[in-house]
Image (cartoon, rainbow, N blue to C red; front, side):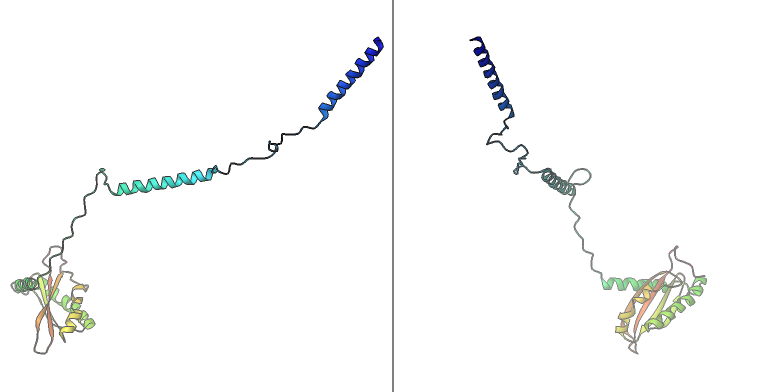
Length: 212
C-alpha cells in the first residue's frame, strides 16, 4: 500500500513539474487592444518647435513696429513734437523799386572820383574780360568806366531778344577782378535798335581783391 502511494505521489509531482514547465515555455501574447511594442504615437494636433519660433518672431516684429511709431511721434524729451512752421511765401519783387535802386547805385558811381590808381588798374582788366565774353555771346562793349571803387560797363545786343537770352552770362563770368556785380537791362532801344544793359561792378567791400 505504501509503495502505491509513493508511486502516485511521484507521478503527480512529475505532472506538476510538467505543467509548470509547459507554462514557462508558452509564448507571451500582448493584449489585443495594446499597440505593438515598437509603434510610436505622434500627436498631430500639437505644433512643432519651429511653429512657436515663427510665432514669437512675428510678435516681436509687431512690437518693434509699434515702438517705432510711438518714437516718431515724440521728441527726445518724451513729448509730442511741435507742428512744422507754416510756410511763408517770399514777397514778390517790385521791378520799379529794383530799377530805382539800381539807378541810385549808378548815380553813386558817377559821384566817385575818376582817374584813381585803382580805376586805372581795374579798367583794362574788365575791358579784356568783357571782350572775351562779348565774342562768346555776340554783344558789343561800348564803354567801361571805373572810378573810386566801382566800374560800370555799357554793353549792347543787336535786339532785345538777344539781350534776354544772354544777359545772365554777364553775372556768371569768372572775372579777373572778382567783385560784386549787378546788371540792369534798359527799357528802350537806341537809334540802331540795339538793346543796352548797364553792368555794375562794386569793389567797395574790404574783402574784394584789389586791381593792382
